[in-house]
Amino acid sequence: MKIFPITFKVGCLELDAIVTESSNEHRFKVEMVTGEPDPIILRRDVDGVWSVESAGDRAFQPDVYKDMEKKIEAFLASIS
Image (cartoon, rainbow, N blue to C red; front, side, top):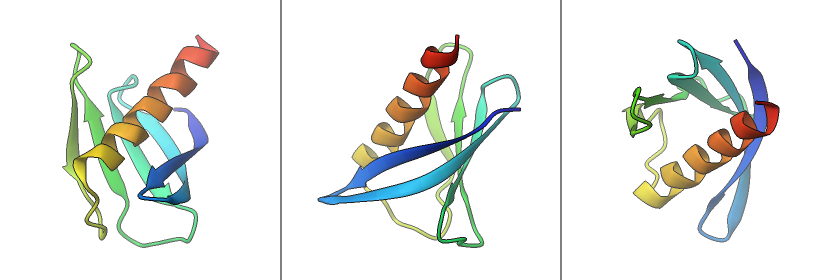
């Protein structure tokens, strides 16, 4: 299990989150640093295709999730 911070963009705002990796880098819990009770759950299949398992309490546009996914992939690549 890996736990790491990311910063992602929503419009012109940058938001901070803590990511917890599980299931051999296939499932990621994204929790806002503000402590919201319902985290975002992202899943990456064996072919590298991402999906939103749970959007949490927020309603983000698809490009926001893509930004999160890129930040997660960049972190994982930096530690490989």
